[in-house]
Image (tube, rainbow, N blue to C red; front, side, top):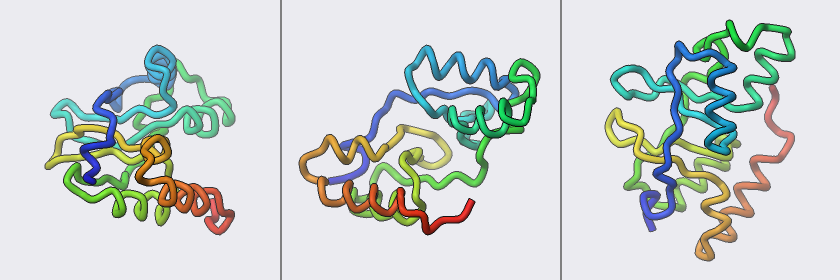
Length: 142
């Protein structure tokens, strides 16, 4: 099975020039904990999570109304092709210790694959369990 068969195509994105407050409102309206940060040409520039807003903005007492997404986002995002096999995706989630991965075709974001997508697929229970075990292991330093 390929990534394209399980990924979500509901893409929630913000501009790097958006503020943290605007991104948080977008997350709330869309009921997501992560937004893609895309440039004017639609290319992926980074990702921003609700945790990023809390730890990189609120916790350091920056003003979310003034702080730009580009100052908070994670750059150098790990991505995957929609044509990759799900086993490869599970290995990537595990190896990178991440829960979600943007699905990119060329320079265009076409979806998002999450650990939850694997969990909800009866075919990948073992891969999801293995990925979750590795993601939550304390081996990674922050």
